[in-house]
Image (cartoon, rainbow, N blue to C red; front, side):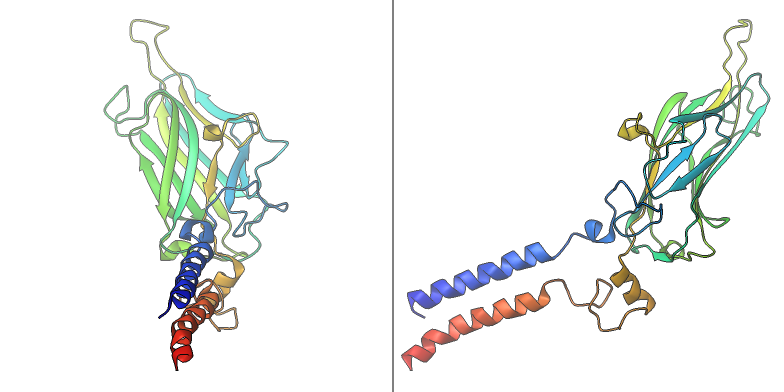
Length: 280
C-alpha cells in the first residue's frame, strides 16, 4: 500500500470511530431518566418522565403529575399531634390528571425517588413509649391500588431527612396500563409524641412533614420520582405495536448509526483495495 492509500484508510477508520461514539446514546439518556420541567398536560413520556408531588399545608391533600408547576400547591405540608397517643400517618399522592396512556419502563434501569421529610417525636419500638405499636416510615410506589415497590426507612432522625431511593425496574414495573393503573406514591408511618418526664416543657409533639415541589424550594427539597420511560419506538418494539422490522430502540433492533458505519467501512475497504488496482 502506498502512502496515499494508507492516509485514506486511516481517515476512514477515524470516521468509523467518531460515528460509533456520537450515534450510540448512553442507556440513561435513551431511557429518559433526565429530569425535565414536564409536559403541558401532566402526562408522561420519554422526555417528560419526572413525577412531581404537590399538596396543601395541612397534608390532607396530596397529588402528583408530570409537570413541575402547580399554582395552588403549598411548598410544605405537615401533620402533628400533641401528647403521647399514636399518630397514624397515611399520605397518598395519586397522579392527577390520571394516567391516560400506556407506558413502559426500561427493564434494568432505575426509578429514582427523592423526598425531604421532617420528623418529630418517637417511632422506634422499644424507645420513648413505642411498645410494638409504632412503625418506621414506609414509602410505596402504587400501580392503581397495588404497591409494586415498597421500602422501610429505619435510620431516619429527628428533624429534616433527605431520602434518595433507587428502585430497579423489574418485570412488575415495566408495563403501565393507561386506563386502569394510575401512578401513586404513598407514605405511611406510626409515631408518638414524647413526654418531658419531670420537665413539663421537655416533650416533643409527633410530627410528619413533607416538602412538595415548589418554586420556593431548592432542588433537594422538591419531591419527585423519575421513571426511565421508553420512547414510542422502543415501546412498540417490545409490545409488538410497531412494524416488527427492528428499526427502533428495542431489544434486537439495529444499533444507532449502524448503516452509516457500514458505509464508512466500505470506504475503508475501497481505500485498501485501490492501491492494489493501480498497481495492476
